[in-house]
Length: 160
Image (cartoon, rainbow, N blue to C red; front, side):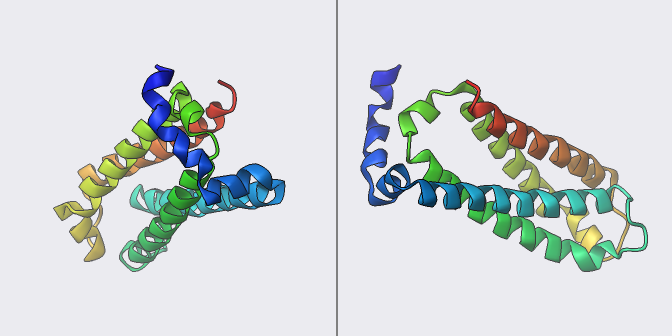
């Protein structure tokens, strides 16, 4: 299978990858930025999903939902950028790591869940101040489980 991943090797020769490979400080900072942005993303997702599930009853969901969604989006964006940068250090190894592949699949599942939730009628009801419909609550529960699984798969990468 390694011969099939050879096309990824040039990534490790890019200037950004070389910077991370040759500078332990740069790697440390990018890795920390990845963890921080992941924390921002998951924190916002968790807060939003818990509100959808009825926690924090005094907090107006219609008011905070757009903010938490944008915050999660920004966190996701920075997580993807820093994750790609970290991936560039050892692209062939990561592409063959089962935990990494599971993480990518879970991220795709999480993004699909977000798309279904945010482009559906249930989300428009939430934003208009109505109670979250059952489908939105099911999506929020799935969201928590999916993104927790992404984090666990990410931690698992280093052990395989």
